[in-house]
Image 1 (cartoon, rainbow, N blue to C red):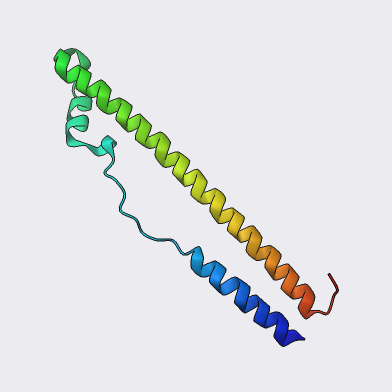
Image 2: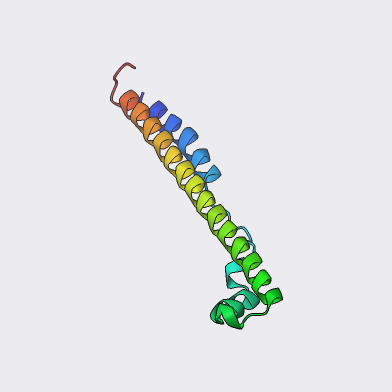
Length: 104
């Protein structure tokens, strides 16, 4: 009976872990590290021309949006990771109960 529990554990856990392996994706360049943005941001606002000021505002909006999007992505990834841990824990409890001979 224990061999069946171990087999179930292997069949359920290994594919689950493999599917949750993180893949490295190429991330877009952050607009917050744009050389034009950093150069304009380092200058006093009253020294900027109207065109430079508008460009700075546009780049600041892009940077703020990028930061919001990155934070949302991180939160979604963390939620998915925690959900996966919960599923694995539950499967482990079931397999342990089966291995110990308890009826579920």
